[in-house]
Structure formats: structure tokens, C-alpha cells
Image (cartoon, rainbow, N blue to C red):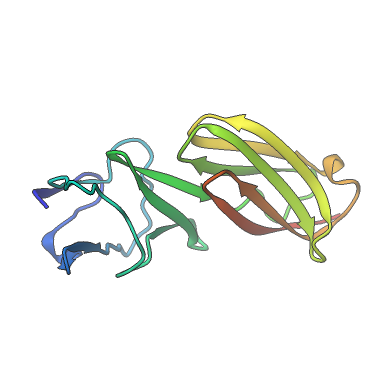
Amino acid sequence: IVEATSGQMDITADNMGLVDGSLAMSWNASKMMSYGEGTLFTVKVKKSATGLSMSDRIARSEAYQGVGLETINVSLEDSGLAINSLAQNEPNPWSDQTLIKFEISKTGPVTLTIVDVNGNLIYKHTEEFISGACEHVIQKKDLGGISGVLFYQIETKEYSQTNKMLLVE
């Protein structure tokens, strides 16, 4: 590690530790923060012949978002950090339409599926999305008149995550 510098997050030596040649990092705050545009923090390293990798060997590679602290998976790609995440649909519960927001690290096809509590397929949509923040609107009419607890999932070649939502009459 050459240096770690703060961006929108205040990073200090207390947030990092070296364990068997690996960097373990943890950061928290008493108030939620939104990263929006810009850099959260930067860690400069000397690249080894074998390259860089990220693992869950010391600590889970994840971040959290929203009031319910939904998990955001993080991964290291090339020289940058790529985020894959699936947010809670808004609104939830919903009755007419809902917005599903997600972020993908690589441009490519994303499949969105919705199943009922028994695992029956209710909705399936595949579309090419550009890396970064994405969203998809679901109309009640798209789901064939079903209501109740449903599970929605996004899936790419490298990533899959499922969340729960409630469709009310």
C-alpha cells in the first residue's frame, strides 16, 4: 500500500489493517451518507506480478445502503472498484407501479424475474443495460393480476441478487 486518501469518506489508518499481506478495511458512520457523484476514497498500491484480487478471506466484501441496510456487493476490476447492487423497489408496498433500481459493473444483458412465494414465474424481462445506475418500471398489469409477497431478482453473467416486495390490491 502506497497511500490511502479520503474522498467523501474520511479514511484513516484506523480503518485499515494489513493481515498476511492483505488489506482489511472497515468503515462506518453514525449517519447514512449518499455517495452520489465523486470518489468515496482512494487506495494506491504497488501492483504485484500476480495482480490485485478481492476476497472474503478476512472480511466480507460488501457495503450497505438504504434504511434497511440492503447489501451491496463490491468487486475489484482492472484498476477500479465496480459495484453491483439491487435496491429495494420504490414504493414498497405498491399497487399500480413500482421502480426497481440497480447498479451493474459491466455493460451487458440483465434479466429481471419476479416469482411468487411458491417460486412460480410471474414476470421475466431481459434487456441490455449500460454499466452504472439502471432502473426498470414494473406495472401491475405486467404481473397478470397477482398480488401479495413477491420476489424480484436481477441476474447478469457475474452477479445475481434477490429482494422481496409487496404488491397490494
